[in-house]
Length: 232
Ligand code: APR
Image 1 (cartoon, helix red, strand yellow):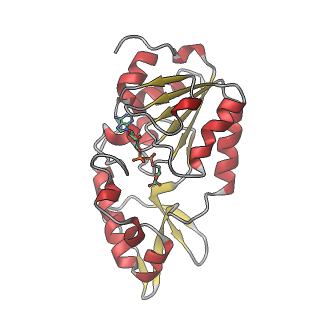
Image 2 (cartoon, rainbow, N blue to C red):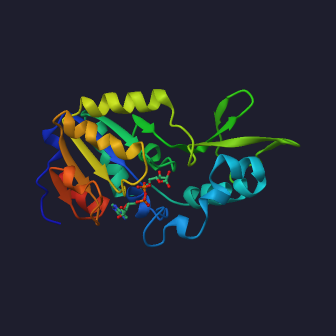
């Protein structure tokens, strides 16, 4: 890919807003489009509070399947370039919709997980959250008491503190790079507007057009790794 109109070294406060597309090259299925996981699994059966209350065992069978799948994947060049930009000294914030933890495994330190993490579990009675990397994880505490996956399911609210921190970073950045999101899930899909309204240079990296493409200054129709290689 030829050099990009955007060179990351020209900016000092960068937000990378990422979706499932950045992990596609690591082998983690996206949610929609070709090979999307929601084409295979009905999220209302496996990824919402009602399903968990109704059949925690089935929800955990799906969740452990996803944990195993992701545990077998590695960060790709896209994750690694984002981590390198942070290590190079720019003020970088990763605001991710992903729950796979691949940004952290690539070395990114300032990562805001809007939709939680595959690698955290929550005790719904106490609210206690802990990191948990066993694959599979035996989630049943006792007869009717299970650890809950600490992820934001459809119908859940996002954590206010995480959203506030994300909005603060987005409203003070000079470069906002959206990578690999279809921009169809709210409230995350609203975040790019904050960057545009505050005058950041806004870039969309996605092989396909999205319903938000028109708000960006630059749309790079490429994969995450190809686009980031040309920007570094
Ligand atoms: N590089 C960049 N983008 C890619 C690549 C790639 N190699 N491969 C696919 N894409 C793009 C697709 O064109 C698509 O627009 O990534 C996007 C993935 O879209 P989704 O599967 O909808 O994922 P995402 O936008 O992250 O979903 C948002 O929906 O199901 C919920 O909570 C879940 O966080 C998720 C949210």
